[in-house]
Length: 77
Image (cartoon, rainbow, N blue to C red; front, top):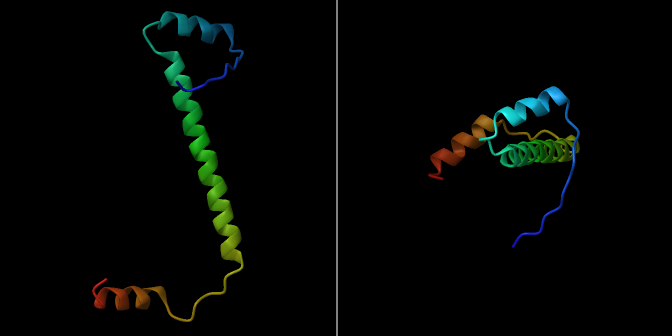
């Protein structure tokens, strides 16, 4: 069984009343999906920032990208 932790959040009363109105919704699942989605977004931003940092140290190549792509396609790759 997967271990888990409990977190608590405060929500406005008007929102809590709406949550109670829609009892058939699995709110735990909604919250978990939202958290996982936000984590994926943050991790992606982190990775892209690292890539940008690595790219800053690179000098442009001498051969245009279109030429490299054409050579690769012509070679049957």
